[in-house]
Length: 361
Image (tube, rainbow, N blue to C red):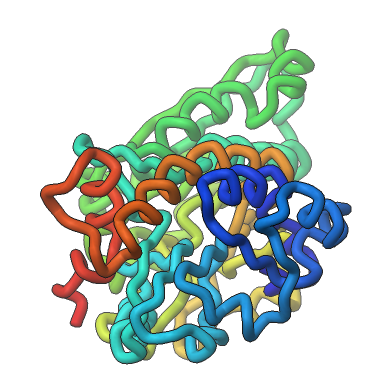
């Protein structure tokens, strides 16, 4: 991991132990887990099958598991080996094509879904709750009537009704925090409106909705990521005190084919180091590519990884979800041997593999 100083998440020693118990040799890059308080010996003590190695040797193995995509290290992998990571093929088409050019088979963790299209490796609850917690914290300061007993309900508009959106509804009704909800139990509550694709595509309706929105939440999964849902000029429709909460956190990839833009045009993409951006923040423009309109602004909270705010809880959840999938992947012999008509877990892995996404070539 370690892509930014503030990124603390790493796989836990317990995952190394469980994978080794499957009869697999586990080679871990030295320094794994140090930002969460673990030392190399904590991993070595889990099994005799665990070894600590350098980065080059770690990436030279049959299966490489990294939570966030190691874009700068693809060349260290062998053709035919398997990469398991959050690869986001639909919005990172160039990443997919690069993996295919190098002959690397891959499974994108964010695309592993069951037969009913439910994600099997996810932490959507943490995305929603952590993001809404930050958003309400900011709104409490930007909205003068937030703590007045005669105010109207706080009006939250959520774009997107998928897994993140559903958790965002519950989090919003609780002010993003159970503790805050208890503190504000005597105040008027929160009114939540959820917009599906038909409404986010209706400019007249959407702009009218923005005018009565205190907190705008982008939790949408767009079928066309080359177009924003909210154009930058429309941000002026929001009240001055309004806050934008970015849970989708799509990147700006203007030179990709097709390009990818943010769901709300002209807002910055934050990190674990900085996820609150006020309109006059000097970093605002630095986070946005030249040519993207960003004149209209409201206070925005955005983080490329909301679950990373609580790293250990996040990695425990991923470990529980990953283990049965890794076992099936090892039994199959790598991503290149996954079959679309295999068993339940094999089908799920195949749907997330490079072999199933040939349409991106």
